Image (cartoon, rainbow, N blue to C red):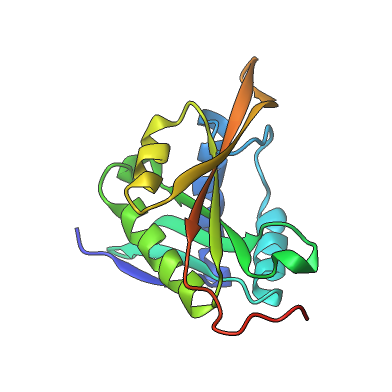
Length: 173
């Protein structure tokens, strides 16, 4: 399967929405209960783009099979060299290397942005995602017990961190 990574556009939002809503409905990869609307995805996209954050998609044979982004980790200015990433793959395309393509591209984006740290928040029961991130050099840096509730049970959140080169001359402004 030939794939192409590219920046997401407004035209990709319905496909991104469909992928995300499947994740909401069937997984604990997003601690969200209700499906999102197209308007919600448009606002999400606009906010990321306005902040200078990347949103990317993987396209295969004209179909969006996955998306990823980097966004604000925390809003205080001291965190400006840290980003939190998201990677989601269409259910029918999981296990085919799409996530690897997305995360590789996001790591390169993070380096280009001169981020020092890239964070992933992962449900602790998602051993596949934890191992996947570890294969890129991410290490577990925090585990928060009973931080969320979904599907009738309490969920633990694992933060995984990848240290990047960061800026050559970081500033406090």
